[in-house]
Image (tube, rainbow, N blue to C red; front, side, top):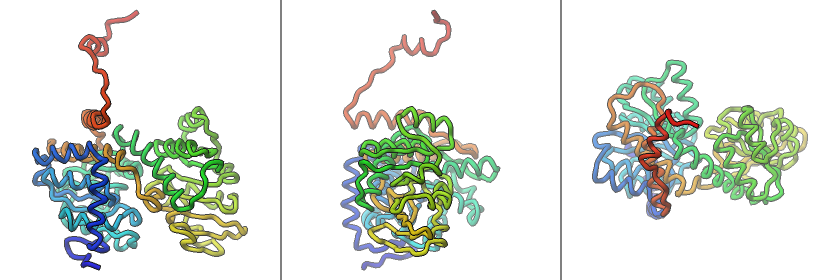
Length: 424
């Protein structure tokens, strides 16, 4: 094993770098929008002088975002946003092939995880990128004296945006934040198509079960839940949706899905997938109703959606890794439940995350949002939406990469849409 730890990085094995480089370059071939932006950034240097600290899933797609940011002139360094999502070969390649300090090891423990976050903040970033808001949270507690040095942060996921809006509501937020997750080129595509495909990929890789004919219960019908339900249904599942939002529940019903409370779905589900961003969505009141052999997994960012702590305390027997990434919990009632990926993000814990083609848009939006914050006057301290012009630029670039052309409004049509005088 090559030396893998220094003040400049902490990865599992630098000897994996060549494997990682090949995978990063393969993903790059499927990310034409981000590649276009990297080429422009190389010429324009919009991030020159910025120190950019990223707390993201360390995957081959993320590596191409970091390459684009570095090409734009930033000093870039990174850590993992989830202990189970790091691809060790990618982390090694970031250090050895691309000169980007990385602090990320697959399956790192909690102390190591937070040590890596601290390593990024110790480098005093002027811009941060987050996936879940752990880095920003630490900035506001242990490193709060550095908050004035940070121009802005970009937040990649729904759970993180929820946390940050709560901080803003409480008056605790000290830096401007851009809700990249809420950009249309992110949540309409990454959350729906990316999460939908990669979640089912994780379930199938971990278990090998036949989805057709299975009863799949999806908790939450936001963009991620919509995508998961659509993919499960496309594979032949009988899909049930549980919701607390009446509008989303109505939408699921009109999409032709069964809708019911989780306490009812618990009795009939074969596979349970949570995608809510909230805690204890699957809890003891549900576990004891479930079939013997029910499969449970989470596609939300944090490992709180399934009450794993209760299962760890109450199970008569726990068999770890009965098959890859699957833990078996024998309950007091004699039934066994199978938990995938320790209750963490199933698409990254049990598979390789979203396809590069969809992350192309999300990370292009991230890169352009970073450019916007670096070149804007001081932004107000609040959670900002991504400017509409960035969404439209990314969408236009993606359409061009796909060889798709669209119509344009005539001057007459533009005038009509901006006027009120014309009527019946």
